[in-house]
Image (tube, rainbow, N blue to C red; front, side, top):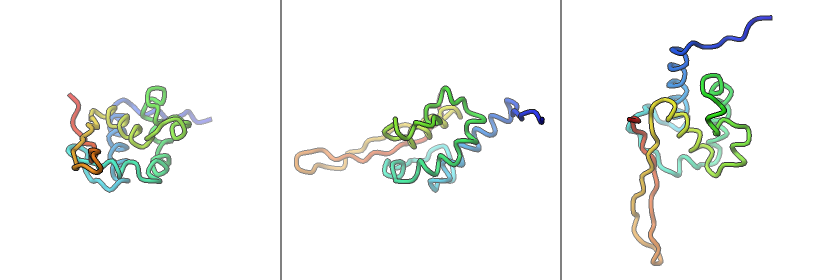
Length: 123
């Protein structure tokens, strides 16, 4: 029986960044830092299903005990599983998904807001 391959620490760091980039590529973004992603893109139907195709690969380099977005029950137990998975993967790579809330006027005496997320380097 062939022993199971385990990537080294250097390979893990490379793969973590590669997978984070691939998740962003699935949404149509070609870079990581400085990208502003609208909330509507992150909650669109089918995005988490696209991400689930990568979960097997993600579990090889990310600790699934620490990242709840990799759990098999994530889609059922979490309100926004795609946002959570992306946020957790980016955090492991040294980035932060910073929420941005902008006022979009009022409608029927109720404030409307536009939500988005900005990817920044974590200090």
